[in-house]
Image (cartoon, rainbow, N blue to C red; front, side, top):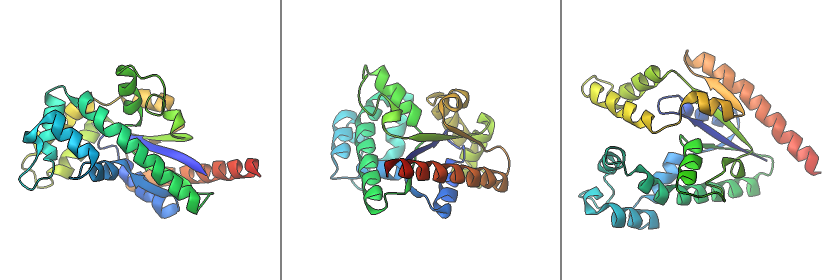
Length: 229
């Protein structure tokens, strides 16, 4: 088995890489999807967010108004508060998912797609934590792959995704720049990662890199299996 973290900044293309890996045979889960599930009404994370951030983050349907919550967190300098609630639960859910994968298939390559692998570690250490899985990503993953792209290209992709028809493009671009300010630069991530995929060209060029990455991950998984028997 091999535990792989797949990361990259907003608009880097990590979701595309995750889809390619899934097609090639990897077990893949998206951290965003897990996080959204944990923030649904009835969940402990939901209750704590409402308790800390107040009823203004609850929409008319009783679910979290994620846009309002994000606005408060990013523009109100309360992102650390939000992360301290969400990250521990999300990482516990990721661990549980990986355990289930390896129970079903001990030779699997399990990939967690998450934008904030390095940021989770940074934020935990900022809060004074020095032990545990939040303060050291190597306790969570055997390997980490980072997807990189120029910041302006990331911003353009993000804005195009949120506002494909044009209206709201500048607002989306401004939101992207604000979010990138809270993310660790690609150069720092690339220096710490085991694998780096550059996504500044087309899908075919990216897919070729992913195929090569998959071959290396499978080889490492096989090597681990051989050493265990």
